[in-house]
Length: 163
Image (tube, rainbow, N blue to C red; front, side):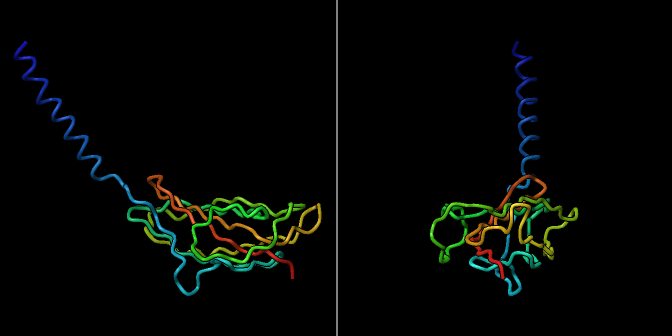
């Protein structure tokens, strides 16, 4: 019994040390979304126009490898909050949505990159089969995921208007 115990203790220690070594190389950092550069768009409190294209300009970075990003645009007519920005925008009065615009799209990032500047042209249509989309306060929510599964989010408050 004593000999069996002497064999299992070193084996158990070797397994635990091996597990610790693997964990040390694991990515434990979230990616970042940088809106501080001069050409960043949109940023908090910007205005987007229905029926007019704009170019999404953001800098993404990660310590290991980026994965993908998604954009969720939805109305904020009830003034709910999940903004990650400190600056307060001037909201319109609370209102009930009639024909609000909603979009959720996913976009890949080329494999193996640790930094990536978006240059994505987005065109928000003026309306749908129910008529023109509702103008007003919207959230432009960006979610960035790295290859390890960590994610970062930016929730921007924007106005969406018709010209």
